[in-house]
Length: 282
Image (cartoon, rainbow, N blue to C red; front, top):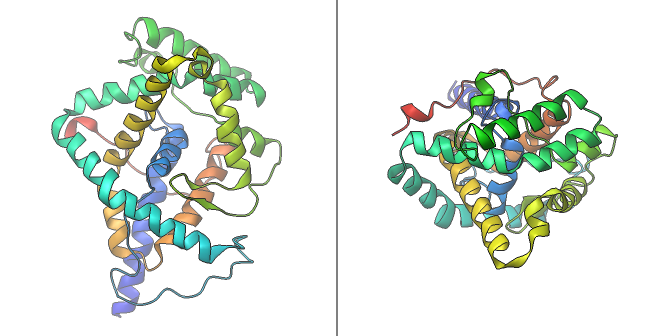
């Protein structure tokens, strides 16, 4: 009975995590780029078999296209250590110091500055209507929204979405390739790793050059990382408490999220989750 209850808690936690990641297609939720940035700083809270103390069952690496799973697990543990000592404390401090309304404006501004990357990938995917929405949102929020700090475009019917070149390759049928976890970067299968590099070319700041542009890019990435981690403090803690095999859980969730993004959220199989209410978080 206790085993069955424990499995129920695991499934519930996984469903809540998946539901939260489904919000990638909703305004201000950007887990496409936001999650990638989170991985850049060390991925997620560390835990394995925390609830029961049991060893996870062996995973059939061939069936999940994870040919170097032992190495990936070692790198995953290192990334989780970085999260424990750097990212999670920074996210908690950010929540404590910065009011919810200000955090919302930070998120809006980051979404806005990433618009050129989304627009380029909208065009490459042949999504003319979505490209028009992205361009219109950028124009409205940069002007009326005071440099992107506010999001009046959403209220006028232009909802936020994000795209990246990894998704673009996926729409053309390119498979992700063997699963790979990179130090600091986190999950980086070949398709998405290439996509990250190409997206840098779509970012106008890449072509500005000079120390100032480099510092701005670094600052955006750091704030993006901390902001996303802050939004998900509680849900990650719950996964840490309930997951028997954290590595396998996030490998599966990462792939489901990417497949959902490639399909523009149309066929995810995820349960519906609630939006994060920034004003209700202290």
